[in-house]
Length: 306
Image (cartoon, rainbow, N blue to C red):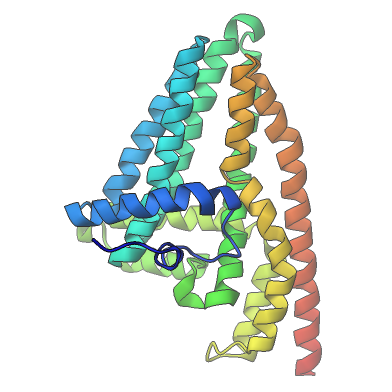
């Protein structure tokens, strides 16, 4: 039996720049072994994603109950779901079965988890908070979506200048809209639907990244063949790398830790407060910083053209 080395696992990662310590030490090794098992069984990555979605939804239901052991069961289920969420991407990269539908499902998976979690918390707190808790939950859910979307966008932007187009899932609304218009519903309902949803998801990301879009436009004009010089890629990565730790905080592990603590002390509303304060401050800092250095790059490239 082949012994799987650290290099084998690292080959299935997007990059060390964008991976979090807990993921590298825990979720990625587990996900890699699950991916190998699923590959051997012939399981499609999208099937693993759907399984992750259902397990995460079950975890959310558990958080409605105040019983300690039910809460712990929910935590275990959420960790299990995230392990599958890690495995589906690694499986896709091992088998070469990446697709826009898979990316759309992967993003939707996390939304389902936290929709169920938020609903369970709101139902749990209704006796004390009344209907107001639903307003708090809805506002928190809105900003959760923005936090996750921009973290995903900036990670893929970093990967684009690190690994190129083939190593990143960075795209743009023009390309996605063209793909959507080119396809017919009769060609495949799910494929057409995934293009539509992916287009709207990307449109929301781009609305908060105007300077980055300007930068991409200038780069396309200056280097029409797509051969962006290494000096610029390196300069972009230097500016982008410090933000990767914030993209990780805005993703899963940190928010899961705060969620678990708030549930264990029977004060789940603390999780909503954490998202609306700490995570939104990090989101604002990340967006402002990214837009600022993209604007400076636009100025630098424009001066070179003159």
